Length: 199
Image (cartoon, rainbow, N blue to C red; front, side, top):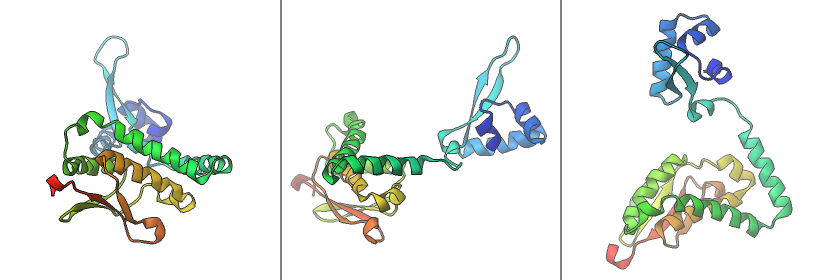
């Protein structure tokens, strides 16, 4: 994978030569990496003859390597907080959450609150959350067992406004955040009321 990071769009022969391993072993390794969505392949033609398969890392594959994203995010937030009030910072995160929800607008039309929450569960999973749903008589509690922004949130708890706004915009209902991992709770929970006709 490190070789693909340095030399994207490499053929099996390129990789075999670079790492000193035979092509068959490289092929088996690439099949495994493709199955894990760490590597992708595409055909590339050079002149006449059959096209060659070239391999590159996927975004997920690139994310396996150390990066400066976390440090950069923390520096950006520190600079913003030096210039904006807490309320203004929260507004920024709220807008991000609203914008994420807006991408799913067509899929949410004519959906009940419960149907919206089911789609929301899938969206949050894609965003890096591990979520569960607990149904009560008059509400559904969305439980998040993890937070993809936890390390940033330790220094910048205003980021919770993103989740709150995303969930609220998604279900088109006000929600109540009852616990939070950043408050030393073992999970984040959001209580979403059901409309009378949906109970």
